[in-house]
Image (tube, rainbow, N blue to C red; front, side, top):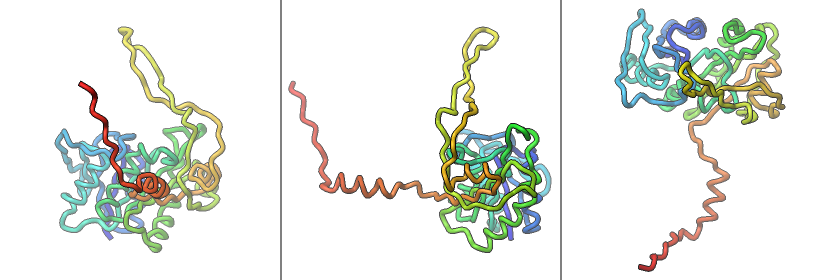
Length: 266
């Protein structure tokens, strides 16, 4: 089995090294194609106005000056054009990708692009919290449990048009309480804020920031699973169509009439 791995934290991130070790428990045919620099938050963006630069870091390890989406396309359509991968793995992200994170996440986007290109794809993220902190997550949680999760996913099969979003809780491996198959949650939008500052010349600039708050995660969601120290496994579909809204609007526009604007008097 040929595995292509990527991420959004960059070619030198510890989560990428971890993911390579995880992939090697499944296959010895593993390729790493990741962004040259941190691309967190770029979502499913393509580099259309700049050329892609591909650098071979070492055998089977490549850095791309581009986004995670660029990396997967380069991998499938160029580096591995002779034999495309059987599996795309994206991560292991430093921090969870749950709730609305999936719309911003470059990690999710890497798996999304693999799915678009017809390759079964999984995004993996390791949560951290106020105790462990950004620079000291429980990487061993993902390393311990990811191989088992991936084997079971492969045995069950991943449907075309669907990617799998896996998040590991912020705890030691032996504290994990199980696996939850979840739906995408939703946070309180008030947690997102603008941090306004001034530079040395008094000119204002801004950071997008997040503030802590208390809210109750929805039942059966990825947020609830992570909070209860369970591994969250969320199937996500490429098709974003709201089928209920399609039915409602189809009824509203059933007469198929186009309103004509009256000409204004001269």
